[in-house]
Image (tube, rainbow, N blue to C red):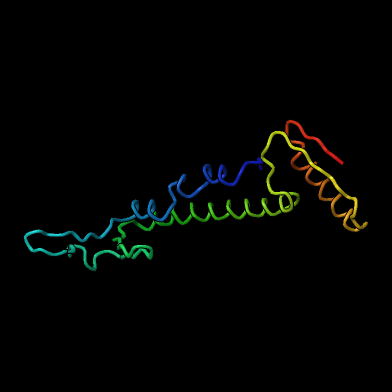
Length: 151
């Protein structure tokens, strides 16, 4: 995978970008059940033309109710797209938490300086640091324009 930030990755692969957020899906598979104020009655009135006709979904954040009108095929299409998005997110998380990225994160800068100070390191700590440094050099620094090591 490319060494891009998570925010940039989400701009490309995020749910909103791919029209898979809850509100975007709901707008494509149904319509919102409305309550409007009727001035002649002086109160809120909810439509009853669809009562019991459609399955309904109540959104937890704001309590708004949606009548679901989509056919099974369309809903299965969204299920498939969401499952692919979940798999992509899992892959990204595994990549972010593996190898040198687990220790150093994703290095995004074009120029870096790595400062090494092993003055008080025990031999086992030195070996761990050397292995981590080797990983970051191979996996990430090779893709950077310029770097310096200061010892």
